[in-house]
Image (cartoon, rainbow, N blue to C red; front, side, top):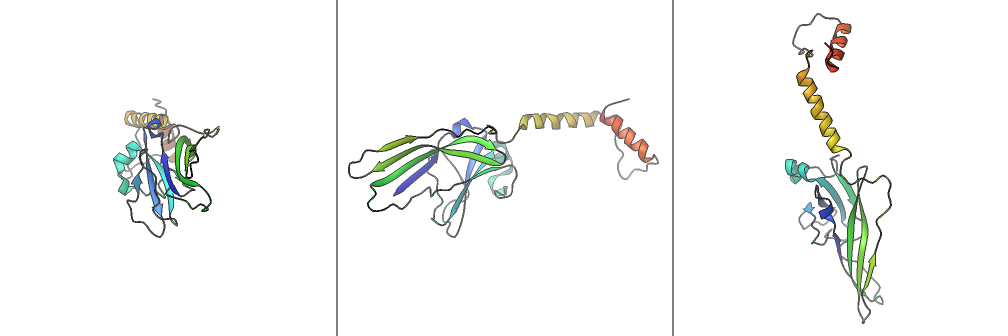
Length: 198
């Protein structure tokens, strides 16, 4: 039985790119590959495994896909595909000929990409009408809609810290500089500089 699995709502998450990564004994296709909502997923061979990674688009453009270690990079969120996205075996008496399965991104939870089956169209032989099923989005209280939690506030905090350091009237001396002040004086000077106390 033929099967086509697509992830259809990528336009709702324009800040990410989805990448398919195949592992297994036989890989004779582009790997890793950019996932498009118009193309069927593949893992090429039945014994292979397919993992989908969500990557921040700006991070991908800055670093380049070839320079990202998909299995260890903490900036990514992943989803392991449990079904064979290319085909399946059915009993000869089963009239099912083809499945078109649509998955949708629900969001992100911790380091996981949350994808769910949103629609399935089953085509049958022997004059049996096609069957369309619609599935609900999972109800997950801790789900977020951005790949990383509080990215903008973190960037703002980093920017603010950099500004404070550049305005610091009490800079910490370089390691090479001779400094006769005691440890207590060093701590006080550091704390005054931290809080901009004169």
